[in-house]
Length: 499
Ligand code: AHR
Image (tube, rainbow, N blue to C red; front, side, top):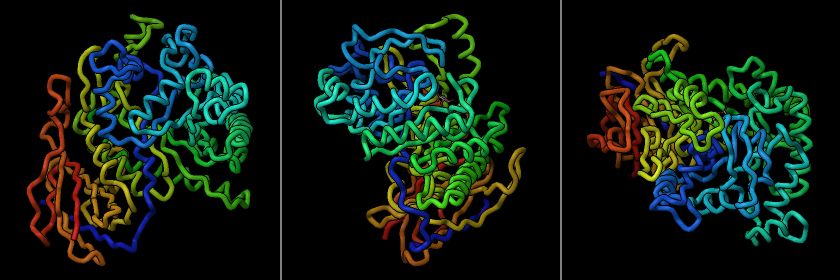
């Protein structure tokens, strides 16, 4: 059995955790909306056509904010197509996902769904085929009280009260050649600056997120952030980061180490933001919005076949990754990484929420169930609120194909509002358990009051509609006062301590 030690001190704090790091994302893509959150003929559908079984699962995740309506989709989207009487809304080709968008669900419906789910909306504007004018108009439509053409149109369309959308994305992945009307950093920075400026003139209480690189693997990563921010630093509040990982070569040690890459990515973007701050002698600090993150690779081959057999279909089963146990471990590690960077990462959107690379799956006219990755997200959202502490961990380290000095144990600790402490810990070792000694310093005598664990002998085990509880958290053996906590090999642990 391996050994590890963790020191926690009340006074060593990273930051207050912004609850929006537990956000998610719904794009008009595949079956996220149609037969995902919305299926009017489903037995559980409410009067608006939203599936109640899905909303119940979303509520379990306690999602404070949901990014919408894209993603790549937004770069060709006319927000005006999604309002007014449904029978008059146009059907359009969606060039991002080679499908047909019916616009049956639009701005009003989504805001109603989000309210029902207990979430705020993070709305993305189209800075691909559209620009600053459409962007400022949708802010006026959504947030202005009334008395202008656009705000009165919202009232006429059934929403007397403004939607009060506080957080706005300035386009999506504008450096990607796959994006409709992709741009250079300077082109995008100028447009983002003007759009954000006008949007804030319409409603000064909003915050905006500028597009960072689509991924840290982009050749322009770094330079893009610097040049784009140089154009818009003073008018934006956050820079977006997108990052997905996969295990296509079945190298699980390497896969579980990839949260180290996320840590590096976050720290690099934060330092570029601060470089531009310095260059501009600005007093303002731009924070980070990790508004797309997850594991994504299982569905890649299937999607290609679907495009060939059903060109321009609607609600196709695209990006339907079936997540296994090791994916849940990496998702846990990514959450730990976000918590340890809580001073800079203020928004996080698990991409996505339903059916499309999602923790929640549905079958058409059938059930809804939780994938393996659902559980670490649910537990972090439930117990990861308060102040992120600075854990000092001593443990063994190992090397993998792409990473060196990978700690066997990675963990984050949260001082919860009720003065209890929650530790989220992953044992990356695929064979050995680890005995973790906790040195709680000024906390005094703290006892482990609960230890929930996710562990499975089969790293590839999955949950399905017929077997939804194959990989779920369970209560670990009790830890006696003063004794070390056992972290089973390949496990995600939620350890709650209190006086
Ligand atoms: O989340 C799926 C897609 O991944 C999004 O549409 C895009 O922004 C990213 O490339």
